[in-house]
Length: 66
Image (tube, rainbow, N blue to C red; front, side, top):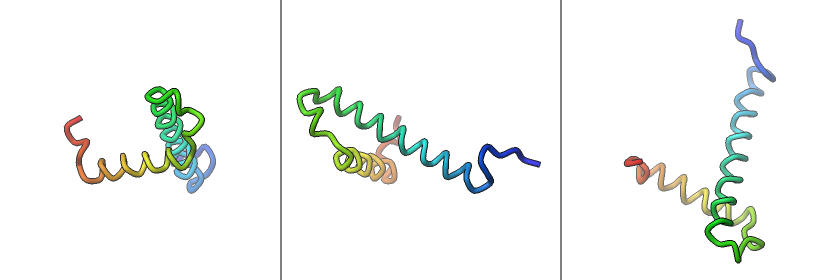
């Protein structure tokens, strides 16, 4: 029998939530490092837009040479 941290359904949801939160925090940190003068302007909307662009580039295969 498999051991689950939360439950059979809860574990994948928990993993997805942690992954998305880590991605958001990394994108925000990267943007603040690039533009420290605009740190107060970088909010969730900006992070979501950048994340969508990165996901689109990955989906199109633009990151395949990394």
